[in-house]
Amino acid sequence: MNWGSWSEFFAMGGYALYVWGSYAVTAGLMVVELILLVLRRRGILNRFGGKS
Amino acid sequence: MSSGINWFKFSSPASFYPLAKKLAVGFGTLAVVFCAVGLYIGFFMAPTDHQQGESYRIIFIHVPAAWMSMFIYLVMAFWAGMGLAFNTRLSGMMASALAPTGAMFTFIALWTGSLWGKPTWGTWWVWDARLTSELILLFLYFGFLALQAAIDDPRRADRAGAVLALVGVVNVPIIYFSVKWWNTLHQGASVSLSSAPTMATTMLIGMLVMVFGFWFYSIAAVLMRARCIMLERERNSEWAAQYLESGA
Image (cartoon, rainbow over all chains, first blue to last red; front, side, top):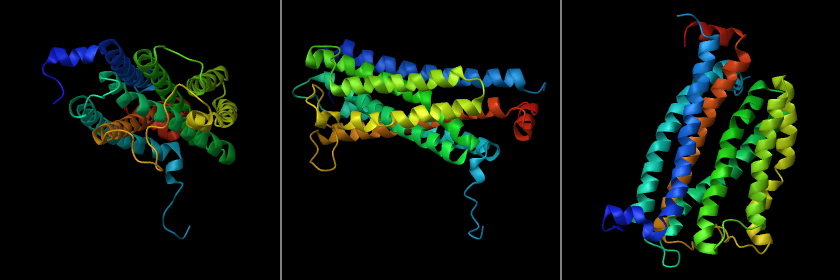
């Protein structure tokens, strides 16, 4: 195990800004892409879908 | 056809549409599993790098994202070429579905590279061959998306986009080999078939697991987008009208 405690884990040996800045933006973009895809699908079904 | 297998069965949107859903669910599940395992290996099993400290842990998303940015472009150019050659509807839809995800991974590769470059090289950005050619890749994706968005007729948009995608494909080997052809600040290839690994084994395994995770994520996201495009473009055809009428 690399980390003695959670605070050590979040500190990333002093590179927290770079490491978490990378991971947060990557995860954020992937989640946003999936949300946009779900919304796009809902929009299509609302516009062109049947009345049921 | 005497072989008994109809290879073109899934080249029509009507039969590909339900298959794409099953594939998206399957690959989406795999993506979650692989990313979870990859992150666990990357953060809790891979040792601290003796030169870069913990900053190297960016590698577990940087390299997979950079690979996907190039790989998705190649797949996009392949479908674009198939669309031009055989004039199949689904090919153009696949190319259009791939572009946003490819652009996203190109941006992630640049973003994480910048955040990795600052602590290790002392700069966010340099105009060297690897970084510049990757930036050009991002502009190629944007160009493809903008060109398609500017043309109303989807089939014409497909053809115009296909030409751009095929011309731009020369950039991919330039990115990949840039670290060999030019003197750059960027380090050489992380993984090579011709030489022994330069990384610790756990680092390498964590990175490769993340590559598969990103790969499966891309397949799932692209198939979800392809399903949207199929419905949008074919909503007046029999299969799509039926599907939409049924309340989906």
